[in-house]
Image 1 (cartoon, one colour):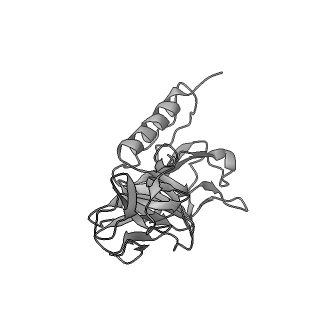
Image 2: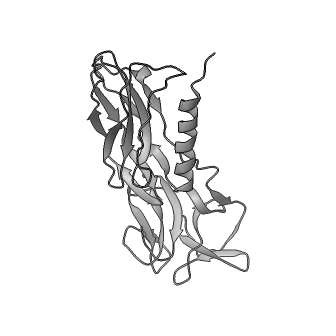
Image 3: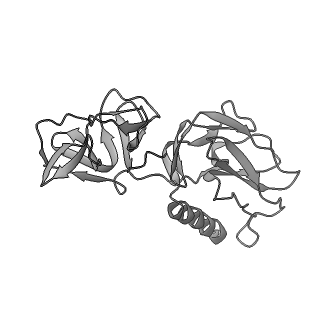
Length: 240
């Protein structure tokens, strides 16, 4: 079986760069062929992290122009720090094989996150097989720190920001928060914390009584992925 090494090298380089730049897809943002099929792609809504900044992405679609007659080209689908998707094209070529691979364009990783690569011919229609998913997916297991079987002070409620005092987790309040109490003696220091009644796609901050809300303070504790999931990422200065 022939393997296009050019394709795999570029894919690995994109993914490595995303990890180094602290950029990845937290949820959604899958690129798919529009239905009914035409020259348009659909981008699913979701959440990304670009250079450490968490960004909400609305569902959107893009037209990708076909190549000239008898030629092929690659288009990279990318998204910026405003959650807006765009396309950058590689050079056209009459060949697309292991000896003459298509040029993969530079998607500007300092300012964009890569979502997918689309191969275009002179045919106007884009099919699912033309799209290669190139998202770097946030792994909530590898990028999380959960402490189980903890000793929790009686004054702590589920969803409170907490800190550790001689092995006992207490409501943070005027103290610097270290984690969020999830319930069942579990404290989440980083990653997904399962709560309830959250406002989706909003930053949450610790208040002076140790509760968390969307009211901005100097203690940002995370960002909501849904009404039940808080991505804990504590920032003492409250910056996003």
